[in-house]
Image (cartoon, rainbow, N blue to C red; front, side, top):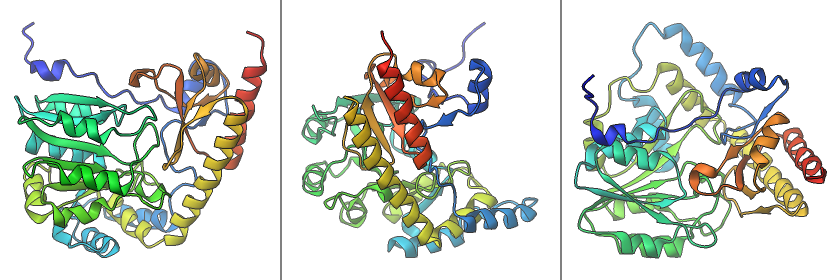
Amino acid sequence: MRRLAKAHVAQIRPYQPGKPVEELERELGISGAIKLASNENPVGPSPKAVLAAREALTGVNRYPDAGCFVLRRRLATHLGVDPGELLIGAGADEVLGLIGQTYLGPGDEAIFAWPSFAMYPIVVQAAGATAVAVPLDGDLVHDLGAMAAAVSPRTRVVFVCNPNNPTGTAVGADAFDHFVEGLPADVILAVDEAYYEYARRSDLPRAIDWVRRRPGTIVLRTFSKIYGLAGLRVGYGISDPETIGLLHRTRHPFNVSLVAQAAALAALDDAPHVEASRRINAEGLAYLGRELSALGIRVWPSETNFLLADAGAGAHDALLREGVIVRPMAGFGLPQHVRITVGLPEENERLVKTLRRLREQPR
Protein backbone atom coordinates (compact mmCIF):
# COMPACT_ATOMS: atom_id res chain seq x y z
CA MET A 1 0.00 0.00 0.00
CA ARG A 2 1.32 3.42 -0.94
CA ARG A 3 1.84 5.48 2.20
CA LEU A 4 0.24 8.91 1.87
CA ALA A 5 1.17 10.44 5.23
CA LYS A 6 3.72 13.21 5.18
CA ALA A 7 7.14 11.94 6.24
CA HIS A 8 7.49 14.42 9.10
CA VAL A 9 4.12 13.32 10.50
CA ALA A 10 4.95 9.62 10.24
CA GLN A 11 8.12 10.24 12.26
CA ILE A 12 6.33 11.85 15.23
CA ARG A 13 6.46 9.96 18.49
CA PRO A 14 2.86 10.19 19.73
CA TYR A 15 2.04 11.60 23.14
CA GLN A 16 1.72 8.73 25.60
CA PRO A 17 -1.15 9.28 28.05
CA GLY A 18 -1.53 7.17 31.16
CA LYS A 19 -4.09 4.40 31.21
CA PRO A 20 -7.40 4.95 33.02
CA VAL A 21 -7.39 3.84 36.63
CA GLU A 22 -10.09 1.26 35.92
CA GLU A 23 -8.05 -0.38 33.16
CA LEU A 24 -4.92 -0.55 35.30
CA GLU A 25 -6.89 -2.12 38.15
CA ARG A 26 -8.25 -4.71 35.75
CA GLU A 27 -4.81 -5.51 34.31
CA LEU A 28 -3.11 -5.77 37.70
CA GLY A 29 -5.98 -7.40 39.55
CA ILE A 30 -6.11 -4.68 42.20
CA SER A 31 -8.65 -2.19 43.48
CA GLY A 32 -8.57 1.18 45.18
CA ALA A 33 -5.76 2.59 43.06
CA ILE A 34 -4.93 6.27 43.37
CA LYS A 35 -3.79 8.42 40.47
CA LEU A 36 -0.97 10.88 41.13
CA ALA A 37 0.27 11.03 37.57
CA SER A 38 -1.50 13.72 35.53
CA ASN A 39 -1.19 16.93 37.60
CA GLU A 40 -4.93 17.16 38.12
CA ASN A 41 -6.47 19.13 40.98
CA PRO A 42 -7.39 16.51 43.62
CA VAL A 43 -9.85 18.92 45.26
CA GLY A 44 -11.99 18.77 42.14
CA PRO A 45 -13.83 21.55 40.33
CA SER A 46 -15.64 24.41 41.97
CA PRO A 47 -19.22 23.46 42.97
CA LYS A 48 -20.27 26.62 41.13
CA ALA A 49 -18.64 25.30 37.96
CA VAL A 50 -20.36 21.93 38.32
CA LEU A 51 -23.74 23.61 38.77
CA ALA A 52 -23.16 25.84 35.75
CA ALA A 53 -22.14 22.84 33.65
CA ARG A 54 -25.27 20.95 34.62
CA GLU A 55 -27.49 23.89 33.75
CA ALA A 56 -25.70 24.31 30.41
CA LEU A 57 -26.46 20.70 29.46
CA THR A 58 -30.07 21.61 28.75
CA GLY A 59 -28.89 23.72 25.82
CA VAL A 60 -26.50 21.34 24.11
CA ASN A 61 -28.80 21.03 21.11
CA ARG A 62 -27.36 24.44 20.16
CA TYR A 63 -23.85 25.21 19.01
CA PRO A 64 -21.69 27.04 21.55
CA ASP A 65 -20.74 30.68 21.22
CA ALA A 66 -18.08 30.45 18.50
CA GLY A 67 -16.19 33.47 19.83
CA CYS A 68 -16.51 32.66 23.55
CA PHE A 69 -17.76 36.25 23.88
CA VAL A 70 -18.96 36.16 27.51
CA LEU A 71 -16.02 34.11 28.75
CA ARG A 72 -13.50 36.29 26.92
CA ARG A 73 -15.02 39.45 28.39
CA ARG A 74 -15.04 38.05 31.93
CA LEU A 75 -11.53 36.62 31.58
CA ALA A 76 -10.24 39.92 30.19
CA THR A 77 -11.50 41.70 33.30
CA HIS A 78 -9.92 39.05 35.52
CA LEU A 79 -6.53 39.42 33.81
CA GLY A 80 -6.58 43.16 33.17
CA VAL A 81 -6.33 42.81 29.38
CA ASP A 82 -8.60 43.60 26.44
CA PRO A 83 -10.96 40.92 25.06
CA GLY A 84 -9.22 41.30 21.70
CA GLU A 85 -6.00 40.11 23.32
CA LEU A 86 -7.52 36.71 24.17
CA LEU A 87 -8.07 33.49 22.27
CA ILE A 88 -9.93 30.64 23.99
CA GLY A 89 -9.01 27.09 23.03
CA ALA A 90 -9.95 23.51 23.78
CA GLY A 91 -7.19 23.40 26.36
CA ALA A 92 -3.93 25.30 26.03
CA ASP A 93 -2.84 22.39 23.82
CA GLU A 94 -5.08 23.68 21.04
CA VAL A 95 -3.47 27.10 21.26
CA LEU A 96 -0.05 25.45 21.00
CA GLY A 97 -1.25 23.68 17.87
CA LEU A 98 -2.50 26.93 16.39
CA ILE A 99 0.92 28.49 17.00
CA GLY A 100 2.53 25.65 15.08
CA GLN A 101 0.07 25.91 12.19
CA THR A 102 0.35 29.67 11.98
CA TYR A 103 4.07 30.25 12.38
CA LEU A 104 5.97 27.07 11.54
CA GLY A 105 6.70 25.16 8.36
CA PRO A 106 9.44 23.23 6.57
CA GLY A 107 12.80 24.94 6.94
CA ASP A 108 11.81 26.68 10.18
CA GLU A 109 13.12 25.96 13.66
CA ALA A 110 11.48 26.14 17.07
CA ILE A 111 13.43 26.13 20.33
CA PHE A 112 12.36 24.71 23.68
CA ALA A 113 14.05 23.40 26.80
CA TRP A 114 14.27 19.67 27.48
CA PRO A 115 12.89 17.96 29.47
CA SER A 116 9.79 20.08 29.16
CA PHE A 117 6.18 19.68 28.03
CA ALA A 118 5.94 16.69 25.69
CA MET A 119 3.67 18.48 23.20
CA TYR A 120 6.31 20.97 22.07
CA PRO A 121 8.24 18.58 19.81
CA ILE A 122 4.96 17.14 18.50
CA VAL A 123 3.61 20.58 17.57
CA VAL A 124 6.87 21.49 15.85
CA GLN A 125 7.22 18.23 13.91
CA ALA A 126 3.56 18.25 12.89
CA ALA A 127 4.20 21.57 11.15
CA GLY A 128 7.19 20.12 9.30
CA ALA A 129 9.64 22.32 11.20
CA THR A 130 12.80 21.34 13.06
CA ALA A 131 12.68 20.96 16.84
CA VAL A 132 15.71 22.36 18.69
CA ALA A 133 15.74 20.95 22.22
CA VAL A 134 18.11 22.74 24.63
CA PRO A 135 19.03 20.74 27.78
CA LEU A 136 18.07 22.12 31.17
CA ASP A 137 20.93 23.20 33.40
CA GLY A 138 22.38 21.12 36.23
CA ASP A 139 19.54 22.09 38.55
CA LEU A 140 16.94 21.09 35.93
CA VAL A 141 16.02 24.73 35.29
CA HIS A 142 15.70 26.39 31.88
CA ASP A 143 19.17 27.35 30.64
CA LEU A 144 18.06 30.63 29.09
CA GLY A 145 21.58 31.55 28.06
CA ALA A 146 21.92 28.34 26.06
CA MET A 147 18.46 28.85 24.56
CA ALA A 148 19.41 32.37 23.47
CA ALA A 149 22.58 31.02 21.88
CA ALA A 150 20.51 28.45 19.95
CA VAL A 151 18.50 31.14 18.16
CA SER A 152 19.37 31.22 14.45
CA PRO A 153 18.05 32.95 11.33
CA ARG A 154 15.70 29.96 10.95
CA THR A 155 14.18 30.33 14.41
CA ARG A 156 10.50 31.24 14.25
CA VAL A 157 9.19 30.22 17.69
CA VAL A 158 10.68 29.87 21.17
CA PHE A 159 8.69 28.00 23.83
CA VAL A 160 9.35 28.69 27.52
CA CYS A 161 7.46 26.57 30.04
CA ASN A 162 7.52 28.46 33.33
CA PRO A 163 7.03 26.85 35.79
CA ASN A 164 8.36 23.87 33.89
CA ASN A 165 6.66 20.52 33.41
CA PRO A 166 7.91 17.88 34.33
CA THR A 167 10.55 19.32 36.68
CA GLY A 168 8.48 21.86 38.62
CA THR A 169 11.33 24.37 38.47
CA ALA A 170 10.98 28.01 37.41
CA VAL A 171 13.13 30.89 36.27
CA GLY A 172 13.04 34.28 38.00
CA ALA A 173 11.99 37.62 36.60
CA ASP A 174 15.48 39.09 36.09
CA ALA A 175 16.75 36.12 34.08
CA PHE A 176 13.52 35.91 32.07
CA ASP A 177 13.40 39.64 31.27
CA HIS A 178 17.04 39.62 30.16
CA PHE A 179 16.31 36.65 27.90
CA VAL A 180 13.26 38.28 26.31
CA GLU A 181 15.08 41.57 25.72
CA GLY A 182 17.68 39.70 23.66
CA LEU A 183 15.25 37.83 21.40
CA PRO A 184 14.91 39.00 17.79
CA ALA A 185 11.70 40.94 17.25
CA ASP A 186 10.55 38.58 14.48
CA VAL A 187 10.61 35.47 16.74
CA ILE A 188 7.37 34.36 18.38
CA LEU A 189 7.79 33.87 22.13
CA ALA A 190 5.28 31.39 23.59
CA VAL A 191 5.33 31.36 27.40
CA ASP A 192 3.46 28.37 28.77
CA GLU A 193 2.11 29.23 32.23
CA ALA A 194 -0.17 26.25 32.84
CA TYR A 195 0.93 26.15 36.50
CA TYR A 196 1.08 29.91 37.04
CA GLU A 197 -1.58 29.99 39.76
CA TYR A 198 0.31 27.43 41.86
CA ALA A 199 3.66 29.25 41.79
CA ARG A 200 4.77 30.87 45.05
CA ARG A 201 8.16 32.41 44.33
CA SER A 202 8.04 36.18 44.74
CA ASP A 203 10.08 36.93 41.62
CA LEU A 204 8.05 34.88 39.15
CA PRO A 205 8.16 36.71 35.80
CA ARG A 206 5.20 38.84 34.74
CA ALA A 207 5.15 37.39 31.24
CA ILE A 208 1.76 38.94 30.59
CA ASP A 209 3.38 42.39 30.77
CA TRP A 210 5.48 41.52 27.72
CA VAL A 211 2.36 41.07 25.56
CA ARG A 212 2.14 44.83 25.02
CA ARG A 213 5.85 45.55 25.35
CA ARG A 214 6.82 42.95 22.75
CA PRO A 215 4.36 42.09 19.93
CA GLY A 216 4.53 38.41 19.09
CA THR A 217 4.62 37.33 22.73
CA ILE A 218 1.95 34.74 23.56
CA VAL A 219 1.17 33.70 27.14
CA LEU A 220 -0.71 30.42 27.52
CA ARG A 221 -2.77 29.46 30.56
CA THR A 222 -5.39 26.86 31.35
CA PHE A 223 -8.47 25.96 33.39
CA SER A 224 -7.24 22.35 33.61
CA LYS A 225 -4.99 22.71 36.65
CA ILE A 226 -5.93 24.87 39.64
CA TYR A 227 -9.49 25.37 38.36
CA GLY A 228 -10.01 21.60 38.18
CA LEU A 229 -11.61 21.51 34.71
CA ALA A 230 -9.15 19.17 32.96
CA GLY A 231 -11.98 16.99 31.64
CA LEU A 232 -13.70 19.92 29.92
CA ARG A 233 -10.64 21.24 28.02
CA VAL A 234 -10.50 25.02 28.32
CA GLY A 235 -7.31 27.01 27.88
CA TYR A 236 -6.39 30.35 26.43
CA GLY A 237 -3.71 32.49 24.87
CA ILE A 238 -2.98 36.16 25.62
CA SER A 239 -1.26 38.20 22.94
CA ASP A 240 -1.43 41.39 20.90
CA PRO A 241 -4.54 41.75 18.71
CA GLU A 242 -2.63 41.18 15.46
CA THR A 243 -1.18 37.88 16.68
CA ILE A 244 -4.53 36.79 18.11
CA GLY A 245 -6.18 37.59 14.78
CA LEU A 246 -3.69 35.43 12.90
CA LEU A 247 -4.15 32.52 15.31
CA HIS A 248 -7.93 32.75 14.81
CA ARG A 249 -7.49 32.07 11.10
CA THR A 250 -6.66 28.41 11.70
CA ARG A 251 -8.92 27.90 14.72
CA HIS A 252 -11.89 25.64 14.16
CA PRO A 253 -15.29 27.22 14.81
CA PHE A 254 -17.18 26.12 17.94
CA ASN A 255 -13.93 24.76 19.37
CA VAL A 256 -14.89 25.21 23.04
CA SER A 257 -18.07 23.42 24.09
CA LEU A 258 -21.07 25.18 25.58
CA VAL A 259 -20.66 23.23 28.82
CA ALA A 260 -16.95 24.04 29.06
CA GLN A 261 -17.55 27.77 28.57
CA ALA A 262 -20.22 27.83 31.27
CA ALA A 263 -18.07 25.95 33.77
CA ALA A 264 -15.00 28.11 33.13
CA LEU A 265 -17.05 31.27 33.57
CA ALA A 266 -18.37 30.06 36.94
CA ALA A 267 -14.93 28.85 38.05
CA LEU A 268 -13.53 32.36 37.61
CA ASP A 269 -16.09 33.61 40.11
CA ASP A 270 -15.09 31.15 42.84
CA ALA A 271 -11.94 32.68 44.29
CA PRO A 272 -12.29 30.79 47.61
CA HIS A 273 -12.09 27.47 45.75
CA VAL A 274 -8.90 28.57 44.00
CA GLU A 275 -7.39 29.70 47.30
CA ALA A 276 -8.32 26.40 48.99
CA SER A 277 -6.75 24.46 46.12
CA ARG A 278 -3.58 26.54 46.39
CA ARG A 279 -3.38 26.04 50.16
CA ILE A 280 -3.96 22.27 50.03
CA ASN A 281 -1.34 22.00 47.30
CA ALA A 282 1.24 23.99 49.27
CA GLU A 283 0.68 21.81 52.32
CA GLY A 284 0.97 18.67 50.20
CA LEU A 285 4.18 19.86 48.54
CA ALA A 286 5.74 20.57 51.93
CA TYR A 287 4.70 17.18 53.29
CA LEU A 288 5.92 15.21 50.30
CA GLY A 289 9.18 17.11 50.10
CA ARG A 290 9.89 16.53 53.78
CA GLU A 291 8.90 12.85 53.86
CA LEU A 292 10.56 11.85 50.59
CA SER A 293 13.77 13.59 51.61
CA ALA A 294 13.68 11.68 54.90
CA LEU A 295 13.58 8.47 52.85
CA GLY A 296 16.74 9.53 51.01
CA ILE A 297 14.83 10.40 47.84
CA ARG A 298 15.98 13.57 46.12
CA VAL A 299 13.21 15.97 45.14
CA TRP A 300 13.46 19.24 43.22
CA PRO A 301 11.99 22.56 44.38
CA SER A 302 8.56 22.88 42.78
CA GLU A 303 6.43 25.88 41.83
CA THR A 304 3.66 23.60 40.57
CA ASN A 305 1.27 20.93 41.86
CA PHE A 306 3.76 18.08 41.44
CA LEU A 307 7.23 16.99 42.48
CA LEU A 308 10.03 15.48 40.45
CA ALA A 309 11.67 12.74 42.51
CA ASP A 310 14.70 10.52 41.94
CA ALA A 311 13.05 7.44 43.43
CA GLY A 312 15.44 4.94 41.84
CA ALA A 313 15.21 2.37 39.08
CA GLY A 314 12.00 0.38 39.10
CA ALA A 315 10.16 2.71 41.48
CA HIS A 316 7.38 3.48 39.01
CA ASP A 317 6.54 -0.17 38.35
CA ALA A 318 6.78 -1.09 42.02
CA LEU A 319 4.38 1.70 42.97
CA LEU A 320 2.03 0.71 40.17
CA ARG A 321 1.76 -2.83 41.51
CA GLU A 322 0.76 -1.30 44.84
CA GLY A 323 -1.98 0.74 43.22
CA VAL A 324 -0.15 4.08 43.35
CA ILE A 325 0.06 5.60 39.88
CA VAL A 326 2.80 8.17 39.23
CA ARG A 327 4.34 9.34 35.96
CA PRO A 328 7.56 7.62 34.80
CA MET A 329 10.21 9.95 33.42
CA ALA A 330 12.25 7.57 31.28
CA GLY A 331 10.80 9.10 28.12
CA PHE A 332 12.26 12.44 29.21
CA GLY A 333 15.75 11.04 29.67
CA LEU A 334 15.35 10.60 33.44
CA PRO A 335 15.09 6.80 33.86
CA GLN A 336 15.28 6.79 37.67
CA HIS A 337 12.82 9.62 38.19
CA VAL A 338 9.08 9.87 38.65
CA ARG A 339 6.74 12.84 38.62
CA ILE A 340 4.35 12.80 41.57
CA THR A 341 1.19 14.88 41.51
CA VAL A 342 0.22 16.34 44.87
CA GLY A 343 -2.94 14.56 46.01
CA LEU A 344 -5.28 14.88 48.94
CA PRO A 345 -3.60 14.39 52.35
CA GLU A 346 -4.63 10.75 52.59
CA GLU A 347 -3.31 10.06 49.08
CA ASN A 348 0.01 11.71 49.85
CA GLU A 349 0.31 9.65 53.03
CA ARG A 350 -0.41 6.45 51.14
CA LEU A 351 2.30 7.25 48.61
CA VAL A 352 4.85 7.90 51.36
CA LYS A 353 3.93 4.74 53.31
CA THR A 354 4.14 2.66 50.15
CA LEU A 355 7.55 4.05 49.23
CA ARG A 356 8.79 3.51 52.78
CA ARG A 357 7.64 -0.11 52.74
CA LEU A 358 9.16 -0.75 49.33
CA ARG A 359 12.51 0.72 50.35
CA GLU A 360 12.57 -1.38 53.52
CA GLN A 361 12.11 -4.61 51.58
CA PRO A 362 15.29 -6.62 51.01
CA ARG A 363 16.59 -6.49 47.45
